[in-house]
Length: 453
View (cartoon, one colour):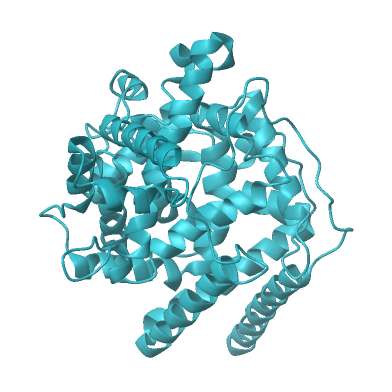
């Protein structure tokens, strides 16, 4: 627990007490030059096997799915066997019931979690993570033409690892590994692929990517920061600002889920062993790892242009995005990113969204049967909409490296096809909740005044 003697820290709109569990820049910086070496070695072996099989077996080409290839060959290669054993080993601290409760947390506050991830996790954390954005803009995945698809792919992974407890369990002699587990291994190997490609280009042309400044691409620090963004930011930087205060047991359960996912994806897990330690890591990253650059502004600009260009019924105005971003991140950060200052109506609309998620949160806490109904309904509909529907990913992705870094290729500012001004259905719905809340306050105030007078 923080004490009055502990120094206060503030960056942008977030302040906290610095404790002995927080990490200094001297502790964090070396992590930029560490990476998942076992994952990199496994990828090299898999690519060598794939090349050999393609050259010597025209009638039966190797699988394009990297996980299937790993599954077929892990018993024949020492490195692949070591990698397979590491991802399938279940640490002794894993409690499957707790992880299952953590999965439910995401759907219990689904709307708030999605809004928070987009407007705080992406606009702030992703845009201001210097090393991360320098890699991402070199993949081409942050062009407005493909950004929405890339966001859906990230969301696919999140939905798969929260779909059910079996979805994240490794396989054994009696059952196959769950889809969330398989996707997490694929993402781990995808990270190794991106790192491998960027480093190859940097060796050919050093000015392409400055390792001394940004660290090794997709390094250990980036991985730790990503886990804190998923596991800790909703608890301390997002939901409370929308009116939801997660309970201690919910925080522990959700953290347990992502601590296990960190193990599978090759990220050190000791940073997430307790809520206090994980929060300290999140705050340390927030203070020392987030810095605004021109690339940050480009990524934020493209994100706003991408989202405001979505077709109905997903259409969201630029004003709502800017109001929500300022609500969650503060004016100073958003000014540094170059976001506009919307009118007061946009803030009222976002306030209506906060009213809605707060009412739902309390209703689900007070009525467990309603909570179960909402969790299962949202879980099934989101999975269908994002992964299975024609408007989503049409069956999903195997997390192959679609966006390949190339010399001379770096995403810049791009404009999307913005929908004409005005509010879409979603914002009108939020506005109704804002007006309902205002009406309720006026009615209660009038009744109180009548009683008093």
